[in-house]
Image (cartoon, rainbow, N blue to C red):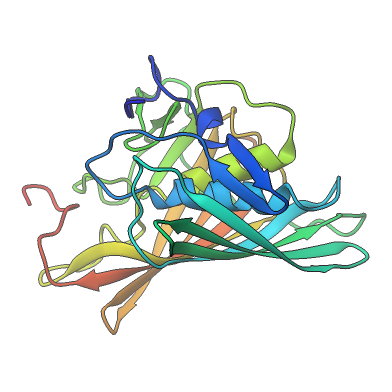
Length: 273
């Protein structure tokens, strides 16, 4: 299949991304392959790894956090094998480890935890930024993401090509399955960077090193969510930023952090570079 990357039209959908073949107990293989001039998109392998882990836990246990490490470049034109280790199944939590393998080498590893949920206090605390809603904003595709669209509200620094704040949703309906929506959120969470407007005269963001997501509340990803990223720090050749994903109603659905290489080279995010 060819990568359309235009948020619509013919070609694969996000549901094709989340279609795994069960090879054996705790062993899965991705079914979507396509030509891509770039290395395998990290959000894709992370979303698939979370799905593989989720398929091994009991009904009603949903992901509350994941921590992943990108170890080698992957190839979108070949399937990825996911091997799940069942570390623990407790009274209300399940812990899993997943490795993603291509050509006999691990390209990505993840630790994920699942929770049965329950009653308790609910204090959102963090408020959604005061931005324009998605209605009325121009719609456009999401580069590298299948059947997802975005709309950009005003930016703190409009001179940069990549926004650090945008609305997004899938352009295809998703099933009523909270695990699928959590995987779609993971797929989205790796796009863009919170480091686009950091001082970058001699260096710029490079490949992702590690990525973590905390799922606080359910967010349907076939409805609008706001992704908001904030730069953190650059040190030792690495850049670190944080992000939040809000529902259209203003509820904090998920938080994430990411660290990337930050090294000398042409800045892909600076206009005119």
